[in-house]
Amino acid sequence: MAPLTAVAAVLERFNEPLTLMEFEVPRAEPGALVVKIDAATVCGSDLHIWANHLGPTYTLPLPLVLGHEMVGEIVELGSGADLDSLGNSLRVGDRVVWANEACGHCYVCTIEREPRLCPARKFVGLTNAERPPHFVGAFAEYGYVFPGQQRLRVDEAVLSEWASAGSCALRTVINTVAAAGGIDFLDSVVIQGAGPLGLFSAAIVSTLNPKHLIVVGAPDDRLRVAEAWGATHTISIAEYPTAEARRDAIAAITGRGGPSVALEVSGAPGAVAEGVAMLRANGRYVLSGTLGGGPQPIDMSRVTTRGLHLTGSMSGDIDSYFKAMEFLGKFRDRFDWGLMLGNRYGLHQVTEALESMGSMREIKPVLDPRLTVRNA
Image (cartoon, rainbow, N blue to C red):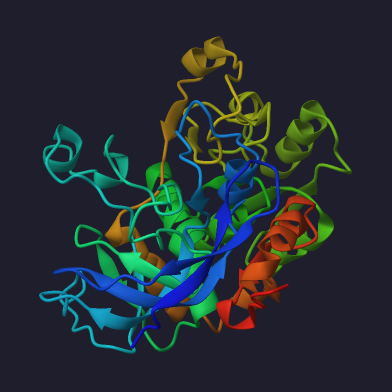
């Protein structure tokens, strides 16, 4: 049974330390779940939200409980909430991950069948926390899963911190890689970015056995993880500081006019122009890393004359969560998922965790509400 009140780390002002605030723990309405957060992880998007770098793409209604990567242990089920979205039974004590809530009745949801792109979707970690149920973000002791949010039971083989990281970064690039279309042994693949999206992309693509798998990024500790997770080559942006130098280095590896596939998961200024410039004729380019930051110029004549295929890929629905959890479990012996995870922090240390990730000292800090000191 949940306590009467619990705390959450609340973003009240951009670029300032988060505040621990106490709220009443809600009761589960029909179809809803109340969960105790077992683990949460910091996403690069959390840094952008904290710094207010997502406008005008997203409206950020302060105050809000930050965070959207989490695993919760069920403490209360509303009536009719005893099954997950795949029909698996749910009971108190089970661990779950859950998706953003789509409206379910717009053209995108019903005809396109792409609820992850619903224009009216409600994002975890981007909802005002002043109104009940308050616990609408990951950086909290408890969480609330609304009736309209799809949810998935987490298998015992998947640790909570893995599932938390997989609930955003991995489920996102599950779609990114799929959008590239049929990667196989003939392909040379470049991944732009060595953060969580890039590293999980490397792991997925490596299981498809491409001819070359090249990860471009920094710092060196992240590139070492990329190699451990299947990259055949890594290119440090510190060693190759210009786009031209990186393009030449990649061409020397791939031959045949450059890579056939590139995945942009860094969000770095200029990355898209660099990706377009490196691809061979008929190359496929998928963009998942850019969420704001303004326009980026690219050479459209190269897109036309080389017949390039550019695709955007955003987020994921419950099928992506399922595939992410399956991937974590299936390949737990092939890939050491712990290489991505950093230190563990209590909720009173969320600002420290954000700063650590922002300075690239850690790839993905872990938040453990059990470590929280309320009067720190």
